[in-house]
Length: 348
Picture 1 (cartoon, one colour):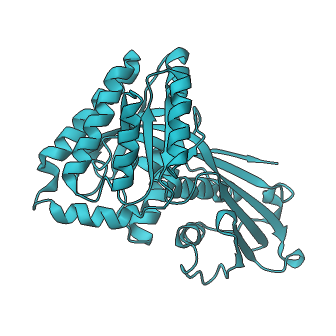
Picture 2: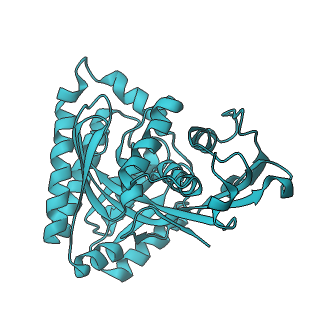
């Protein structure tokens, strides 16, 4: 049991964790791929978590969850947690060793729309586990937080889930994630000059098609289309190669090459299943081509919802024209900034 005095006078615990885009090599970080590589970029908007601890005799309920994006505020019994409203949140709370002598109000929010294929669910679990780890005076490393967050989705909830999203959220920055034997992975920072970082941030635009996707569902469709040994499939081999090419292009500041890699990655996604690049994605790509952009990357698994990262040619007036046209077509432009930091936890 965690003593009340260890909670530092019941100070509020804050945690933020970034989302991610541009996950070149995605799909090779899965159990059926067995091994792989992904190069991705962590971004703002973050997921924010605040935990307000109170003595139990001062609270109306032992545990209150406020899922702000959904307008849901409800109490649960920490001794008997049922995964019925927001399973990811409820499961994260369930697997952590909560103190018994304190009541908690947990607030969760993000400017990223749910199901935008930006690894938002991973950022929720990473930030929530990070905050709960601080509450219980734990000593989980970034890697351990990411591993626990992945286990939460894949084992506790039984969802199809790769490992890249949780690692991107925990570490932040631009990373090459290498999976030598699923789910074991190593994370290598991709170090680039500030000028390349700023240029990449300025060139990128993110278009959301306005409806969420459910990556576990599309995973099942793709897996069904592979043979008995998916890890040997030429499409996964190509995606692994493209992850390393993406890292090399970023290190060189070669945006033309990076744009071509985005195009190649999207082409492989199309070949994996007809539903991975939906009509809305194709329309965004077609419009982007009209503005001489360098390439588009369907974020995450793809499917009938989510978002597209567009690498423009660096002409900012043309980028704004593109954004205006996409908005007029009903797509949502999400403001983004590259995130140098991953999970952050502090008390206030």
